[in-house]
Image 1 (cartoon, rainbow, N blue to C red):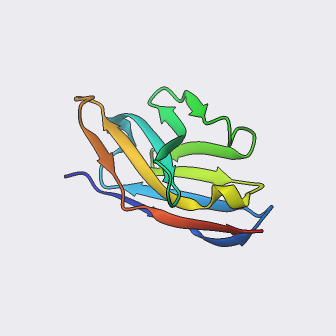
Image 2: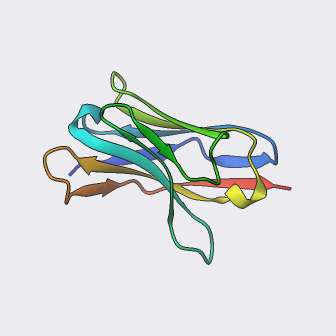
Length: 118
């Protein structure tokens, strides 16, 4: 099975920055799309940002202008640069990948905690 491992979470003050990383056990070229999701206590998991094989990106309205998704195929790593963090960004952030050869197959990481204090 494909493994995705997130890192880079932590506790920061409002206005601060963090960069999340998602290391994949398989080439990131083998995924048609990858993305970041987050889930806060008492809320459903929501899409934060996605990036396709071709490099097209999409962002949730709540993070546009503050977050940037990217990937380094040489390092098999997906990134999420988070700037101007707000307390409402507090959540567990998870990495997701959709198989290039079977769109019905999706992989998930264990998640990394991001906490933003006011």
